[in-house]
Length: 92
Image (cartoon, rainbow, N blue to C red; front, side, top):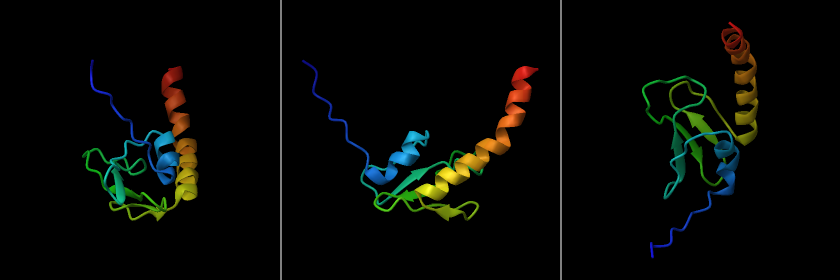
């Protein structure tokens, strides 16, 4: 019989970020790390962090910071500005 794997529940403060597809490295850390979802960094480095307890985040590359609510607002703005060109390419 294979060993039982225990799936660790993510901290509550990280759920808004995980729900929107961020690949967070959070286990055993005070600051979860990810590639910034806003600055389009293609170097693969994790310069975006979010506090595991407070949901305060920051991007070390472009200096933005906030909390879960400001993250959702920025995500909304990014989706509004980038969506039109994506649909135009799809229609073509």
